[in-house]
Length: 114
Length: 108
Image 1 (cartoon, chains in turn orange, green):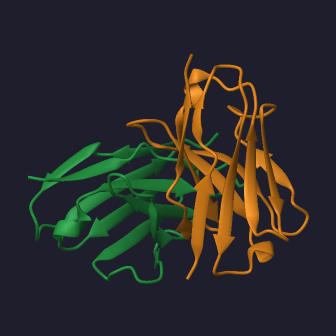
Image 2: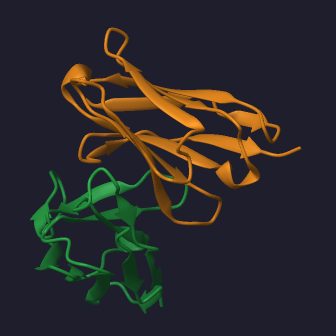
């Protein structure tokens, strides 16, 4: 059974940093691209970042480019999102998703507030 | 950036009725259009990919159609568990992915 479990969310002040993790199980993690998608409270879905399976090539939405870094540790079956210079508008639930978005985690809430 | 516009924003229907949801792209996305269902407090669930292919375990009452810029998600006969928010997503401009704003299907 495929499982994705996010962690690392919480309350952080504007300008602060946070690192999210997504622990994967039930599939060969190293074979699949992974992504982060976020959802602000009461709003729709926004793609944040993706990373390919093999070379680990990374891609970012313009809204987070230069501030967020996606990475993966295939030996630990874990996906990461390092978030720096956080802003109030980054407040959202952050979901990790596998490959073609066929499986999603339950999300972790990030709140950016003084 | 490819913009996806979903309509209507809200659809009020009764169980057993047919639901027709629309997703229009600002430029052609070929068939690279995906539909998701999201219930309150839950992660999105993949329903349809490549415009018309049902994902594993998705009931046959869900169907997708369209290509280019105009797409439709049809639920042939609404079950109580189908009342939710539905999002379309395009991957034509991978790696830049975009979602539509969503359509809420509510009980009339």
